[in-house]
Image 1 (cartoon, rainbow, N blue to C red):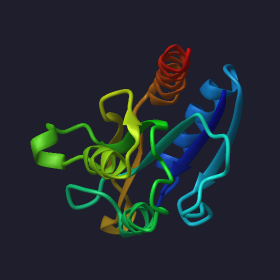
Image 2: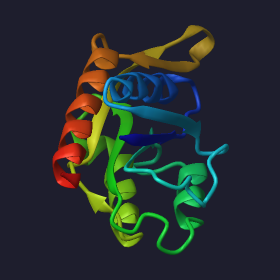
Image 3: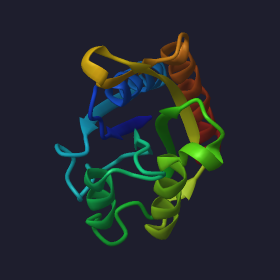
Length: 161
């Protein structure tokens, strides 16, 4: 299976989740992992699975990720297995929002075959020095991301069989 992981990240947490997802996918085949800035709107040929994620900001996607999804070539994801993920605070979803929900909607609009519900990986906000807020991943989220990716790959393999 040929997989592609595309992520947007401001502070590194979503990048770390994307890397953990790529690690899980490598147990099932080849993987390319790119930031949304590096990814082209034309996906590489022979991709079987695409996972796209980003941080949740102002209840939704970042502008970088929104721009990438808006610029996808027509039919670029036609019938390709996809899933979306995000990072967000461990708050009720109605309060924090979820980038993964918006990503999933955009992927469906692009003709992709969504094979899993949107998944959130959690960060904890910390009041830093000088009143600056920072955030770090909750304990165990990297392992959970790796396991999630393996399950997504297994679902994609069953779909293509």
